[in-house]
Length: 78
Image (tube, rainbow, N blue to C red; front, top):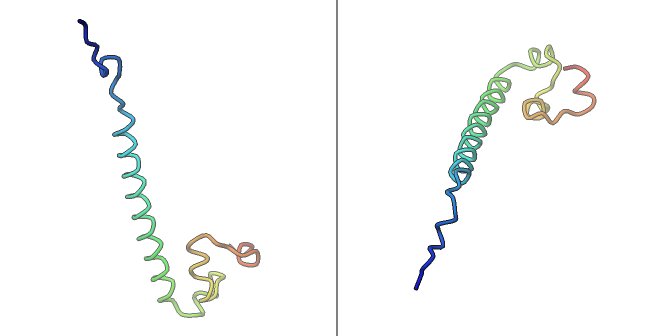
């Protein structure tokens, strides 16, 4: 009687570990992007209203400007 191994015809999938590392790299990149944006919001919040007006935003528009959620009237100034 002959037995055939079910794994004999299969190859290892390097993409499975590559997918993990790709997801990990994406997560790390997203984390650093988030930290950088939080730092930018903090820095802009430390500015006075005159300095914010000089760069074309108001205090209420800081997070929109940092996170890229521009409104039509804001985008023409930037």
